[in-house]
Length: 553
Picture: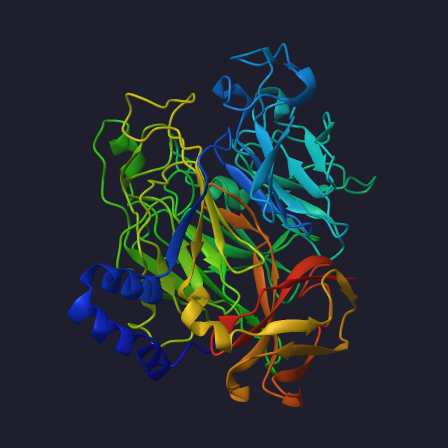
């Protein structure tokens, strides 16, 4: 997708740069850094817990949780509440929170209460906007938890809601509004939620056993994406299949990534399905897998030998008749990174370490600089290094996109308990936001503002949709597009259900001064866009508007 032209960036920056170089070198550096590589903002110094799991809901609040057996957190439960769990391995009675709700608008948190252990779990948002979280550890590994988006809601728990124990599993929303829950530690199978009489059991998936490295695994938190043909692309360890979950049949086996190094937990890389261009006559589907740890790194880390992380990405067009992985080299090696789709189609690679693996005390040398990946640029010119944070984001870090285009970043706790002193990388309770360079104030006159539809609008499948927007500067109609993003459930470098759809581009009409309209078509079916809440953006010259919530049904 389009990015701001180079001459525009030069126009905005160069006159100020020259003046600053001559008279004020300090501010000059700040101007150049802000414009060229994004900006970091500390939002809250202490949210009480570490942000191990995050999900944005359609009320612009983010549900965050870690685990119940870390010990006491830094946030008390309200109104004298205490969690009483005789099965807890650390604190059977605990009056502190292990989940919070972050309100983006007010930059504040509200303590939430989980009863059983949610450590290393999975989840997805249903079409009605409710977050369904599945599994965890100990007495929480077969629990289903529901969080409804309201100002006073709290977690509801369904004991034994799952057919099998789910710890390090992956969830994905299906076109029929069910979730599929795949894998987990020593679980080479999958199941569905909600349960029905005909589909209440777990079903064997031998591929997960085939990709299990004895004593290491490397098949946990598999990367899963809903293909445009209705099947699931499932990546585990270093290879992938196309899977018909309804018939329990492997439709296609993809090649192993060249080099054969593992990319899934604990040799944790990350992945995205690249944006789907729905206006194309034939929709191409591509998956990008980046980072991870070389073969043997996990064993070496247990011996305090921290092997350098992988520096490669592998990209595959799974709609090709004979798909092959194409390798690319990142500017920075990275393990435990997060990959976040941005509204303009770029991919932000953020967080993680440059040596070691996931697991307790297994990572070294934090990677403080995010990297931007521009998928539509020619091979060899797709990566750009962004400005660094000052906060290491190691094991148990997360990143998600917000409706205003910022990326919310939190977490990091490579310790069995909360540890704030005497360790290399203390338990991290700070919450920050990264603003990509498209939010630079210099692009304000190019940034669209959506006029209609209004936020929370309901849309149908295969319908004409006119989006009205304003731009105060000069509009380039050939660079206008409309995108629609499904927010992700993010944990352990995996953004479950993350999906970006390009609804249309061009076809812009001038309604009145500085006001325009663009006609697009909504996704044709729930296979392309499972029903539920999405964030809709107008993008102009690579610069997105603030998004609005839409519910497709």
